[in-house]
Structures are given as C-alpha cells and as structure tokens.
Length: 307
Image (tube, rainbow, N blue to C red; front, side):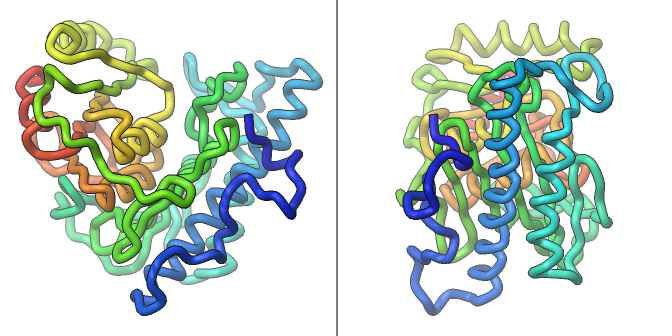
C-alpha cells in the first residue's frame, strides 16, 4: 500500500498538484480552485498516513476522542485531518465559505442531477465542503477503503472535486474544462445501459437502523436484477469508482453533504448523473438519499427497483 509518510519527496505517490495536465487557457478560477482542492485533500491524506502508522505500531485501532454514534467513531485523525485541509483553503481563499464534518464556517447550497438545478436559492459565493476522513471505521480497523474528500459548490452545483486515498495510492480530481482524472489518467463512466449488466454500489443505513427493513427490501429487489452489489464503506470512493467505470450505479438511503460533494463533482465531469431515488433534485448542503449512475437510462431502471 502507498504511504505518503514513507515515500521520499523525490518520488511522490501522486503527481504534484502544481503539475498541469490541462490546457493553459482555461478559466483561471477553475484552475486555482482545482489546485486548492487537490492540495487540501492531500493535506488531509498526509495526516491519514501519519496516524495509520501510529495506530499500526501502537495497536490503538479503536482509540477515539468521542463517540459519534453506533458504528461511527471520531478519532483524533478526523480533527487533525480537517485542520490540515481547512488550513489550505483558508490560506488560499479567505473569503470563501466552508462546510466541514467537524466544523463549518457557513453554507447553504445544493445541486440536482448531473450538476443541474437546485432545490433552494443558490449563491455564487464558493462553498467548500470537506470530509477529512470518509470511512473512519474502515481506517480504524485497517481497511483500505478510506479517503479525504473536498468539493467546491458554486451557484448550487458541485463543480470541483478532489479525493485522495492514501492506502491505495489513488487520487481523483475534476473541474469544469479539465475533465475528470484518476491520478494522471482521464476517466469516464462506463457504457453499461441495462441493470442486468451493471455492478451496483450501495451503503448500509448504519446510522439509521430504523430504516434497515426498508433498505433490505430495496436490496432484495436490486440484487437479483444486476450482476452484483458492492458495499465499500466510503461513499466518496464509491462515487469515484462510478466515475471511472468500475461501478455502473450507486444508491444509498442517506448521506451527508461532505460524503458526496467531492465525488459528485468528479462524477459530473466524468459524464455521470444523480438525483434522489424518487427523481427529485438532490440538495448537496442538505444531503439525503442518493441515486447515481453512469447515465439517465441506467438511473431510471435502478430507480424502478427502489420506489
């Protein structure tokens, strides 16, 4: 597994954020904001790497500073990673708003399917939405499915995204005019159009166990109709896998804004779309149930199994 803390600076695990793979005549705001998102996600990932080494050496895999509910822990790594990520944003864009899992400056923004539409009045003041550690339980148990996710919402739409997964050595990033990338490779959603040929991602309602019976009914309707269902424990990574074509669709009953902002921005630039399962626009700042797919046809077919 890649480890940011152990690799020499002359051999970074990811391309340096300053390195541009896009044309130089792009909107300078998108270019600068993308650079900020990538630096911010990488700063949080550096904290992941340091703490992962410490947890491995000390055997403190269950250490947490406070309880956040059943099956959801907040460890020191959450707080330190958030501080590192927000420091980058505040230094580069002191007037921008921030909404983060552990703390927030302000924020009310949203988006609909495929980056279009909003259920509430948007504002053009950029809003950064940060998840310093998506997949906290995975991290504490040594499971590689965890990451840092940074998204930028502008005028009600998630436009810029960066997701860094230190355990697997992967970085995803996207912005208007740049497209979507995994490390240095351009990514695009799959071309699967029928549910019968699709691999579908999902998430369990572990924070809302009262919804488990309904979810199991949905699961029972979807599983027999597709090639398989996968649950990784990190919605941000699930959306990145959807963006790169490793998954064809994804649904989950409830997600917070920081779970989805970065991944939805990447998915939009990779050609995907999303909404609520009932077809209504999804407001990013509010979070909620998510139905995402590589395109409208597969999304519509999966929706029929969920409603």
